[in-house]
Length: 261
Ligand SMILES: Nc1ncnc2c1ncn2[C@@H]1O[C@H](COP(=O)(O)OP(=O)(O)OP(=O)(O)O)[C@@H](O)[C@H]1O
Ligand SMILES: [Mg+2]
Image 1 (cartoon, rainbow, N blue to C red):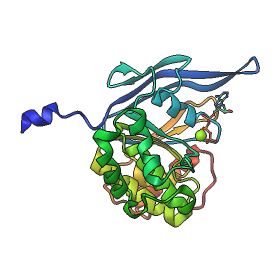
Image 2 (tube, rainbow, N blue to C red):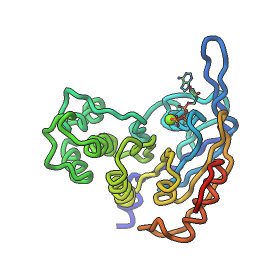
Image 3 (cartoon, rainbow, N blue to C red):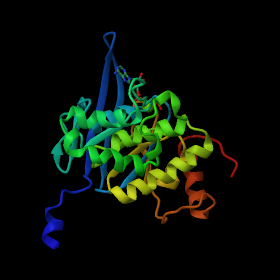
Image 4 (cartoon, rainbow, N blue to C red):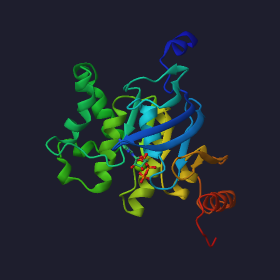
């Protein structure tokens, strides 16, 4: 038994962002986006990133996914440099849209098809459909889904690849508040059962505090880390938990947002 466990592939990876600065070149002008960002995320940890619009949050996720290479500094997974995208590290994009011409099942199948794994792992599609509670909707097309269902299908499309690092870019931004609450709980359940490392970008301080082990606040562009708080509260968390309210207050202050709680 111990041997089998030792041989099983790890469900999560450690992510190290080491002294990363990043610049974009636009019309011959340089745009400095990240300024010496260093961040270590332990295997299986859930980290939330907060920061003003346009500061570089999505850029940081793209670097972690291997979709871009930092201008300076390094991104490491389990100590090895990240040089290219890999299905172990999946990014759910800020404006994740499903392919309108494919059913929910077809959308979820795309990653496996691209990797030539569809025959071998087709059973995973049904498993992830069940995980995101869409088992009755496999043959629906995207236009036949509600916003929350589409978001769950996008999550399933990521999960079918069994990512060890799940990078989520404001995944619930467009959902109504009730669906959002439900999706937050579902994401937590998925994280607990699958065991992946999670890095979530959100604009919502409360969402960060309800979900993450650690919340990191970035400054205006070029983004630097300006605060980091550990959220040492067990799940399920209550939003009226006094320690979360205190953390919320200090995070909002760091973000320069007035508050009345
Ligand atoms: N490919 C690119 N080429 C040039 N500039 C880019 C590119 N991608 C992003 N930028 C610029 O980099 C800055 C940071 O963008 P990024 O998308 O990382 O911000 P963000 O923090 O995710 O913002 P938001 O909260 O609004 O999603 C912005 O000024 C943006 O215009
Ligand atoms: Mg963004």
